[in-house]
Length: 243
Image 1 (tube, rainbow, N blue to C red):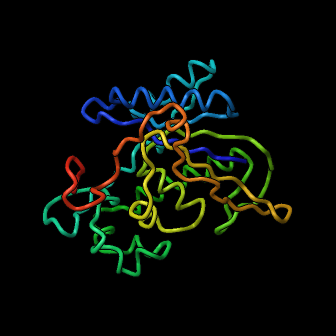
Image 2 (tube, helix red, strand yellow):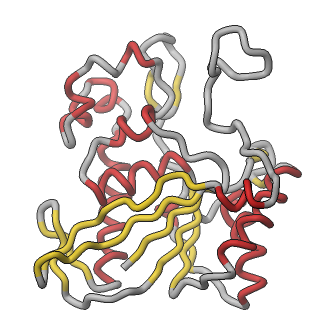
């Protein structure tokens, strides 16, 4: 079974939709996805994800199931470098997490005092438990860090969502702390990430990432990637965000 996780297009957060560029990106994405229709489609309830899926669904004559847990990962924690400033877990300066051992161990990161204060575990547990239920619907039962195969298949599932929650899904599927994904990787708008089951011994499967943040559909159409979710590449670069 393959899971294809798609981040929404270049966002206009003020209206929870897409920028003009985001709509162009969604068109490029549709050109890609319609060539290999999936078996099942799921989508965040938020407008920017639904708008990203819109053209693909219309051209295929298909519909998606809305999953509330695919909304952006909703947490508000006090960022260590900015007293009184609430932010998402994925927006920390490197100096505040990279040398903290708990952020490099699955499970332990939730015991960090800032994460506990922000009740992040409740949100994380909800998202991953709903993911586990969905995976079970499709034939794979979570047992420890692996999956018992109850109905093995070659189905393809597409999820339209957001970078923050995508990182949480991946952290569950491949068993690494999300802090390493949030801060060490970036899924740019309309990027496509693919993970697939591997059943090397009958009855037991794990998920393995085949590609992260692929944007070949944009390059094929001459559409440059958006900068959204990135931070300044070199100090002093104009127009690139610091915070």
